[in-house]
Image 1 (tube, rainbow, N blue to C red):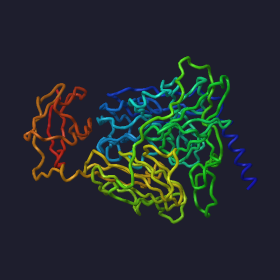
Image 2 (image 1 turned 30 degrees about the horizontal axis):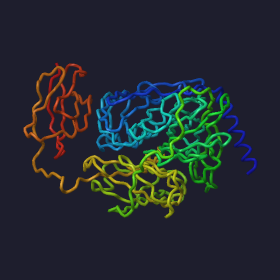
Image 3 (image 1 turned 45 degrees about the vertical axis):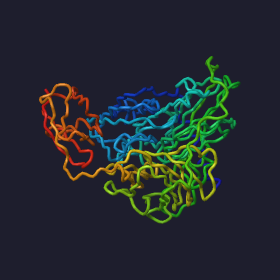
Image 4 (image 1 turned 30 degrees about the vertical axis):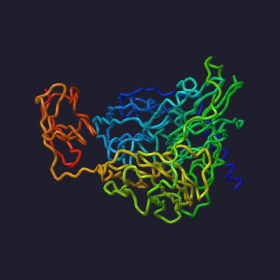
Length: 568
């Protein structure tokens, strides 16, 4: 055991030494709404010395811009897939219609523009976006097609908190990658000893000697982080996945499973000219949680083999500079009014079970309720506005971060014991530890749609790619359900030929489009428009001249009608 520990220590030392000099942390640009244009592109990045790495970027960067949403705004997107294969873009943690969610059903073919939109209902917090193309989520996300979303609201805006982006409010997208000797990313690799922050290897960040806000995202495939500072400098947790906490919480560590976010405030006053390290204390992560010490495994089992497992290592070097002259004031005693759902409000109880395909396996395929994911199977049908308690039972020897699409939840308890204040507030990812049983409560408000499902799954990216995922639809209430025996309402496109904008005239005045796709005679897709607003017509001036087909899916019947038009 002693020789094994010595070998591990030497390996870690050699790995960190090989990383070379510290590099200035890259801070992603911001894009403010309500209108956004994003392009997902194949690209190259100089991550390590030597050969460039094949990556995927958003707007030509490994990792995309930070998107700024304002609560109450309707945000609209043009998302163009410039990759050489299909993908999707999922708005992780955002409450929105399933048809806009960017899950595995909302595929964006090569060269196509997808145009989702929705009203921002979320509270102020840090969210993110990443691809969710089934069996390619790990590859596309780890190669860099991801970025942060910051939602702002009046409640947060009125608090004395650091919020000057890149000045005292910093985004930190933390990734743990396995890279081959050719500097290429191995998406399903568990020897993930390359740590990047905002795509930067061995980074440093100069911060002012005052209160600083760090927005933390674990964007790794499987590694858990246990974050804290050298010298055990105390700091305050102010927000988790989906909301500010009720009040600042003094902590020395913050645990982040893949997909989880947290916001912390640390005061560097009096530390000018010093160097403080943001570290992950993997030695404190329990066995069975990826990133912790390796368990004693049966012969032939393939665990996570990274030298960083169970080790304490540097994430980011912080160089303390003079104050910037306009520091934020004292932290407020209270932060935000908390969303409260109580068990006696619940109208439904459900159980979600995790189990391994091979009993006792530490790797391989895992089931949700005894099944792997099927795109054509709806696992749950939930009435709109239902408040439900879900018991999540992990019957495997490893931890799995549970993620719910489209809706946020509160964590009720773990094995019947109330959770600590660090897990209160709105969540969309929660770690379920080996052989643990925990309960969450959620309200499935708004956005009923029996056609397009939402997902729930393990957020270890290779696990969801391997099928540790299920899906549900939200059913409308009986009072709002429309029953129609008619086929899709016919319509006329005009003018035809058309130059810039095309209009619709429906035979039935109440008709609405659920989905529109525009393609050419050989089937190449140009536009995908979920629930388009047609009263002012569609802009098509970017289409080249030629013949096109517009396929409209009816809102009520979900039947399709296709019309031909000529772009002049």
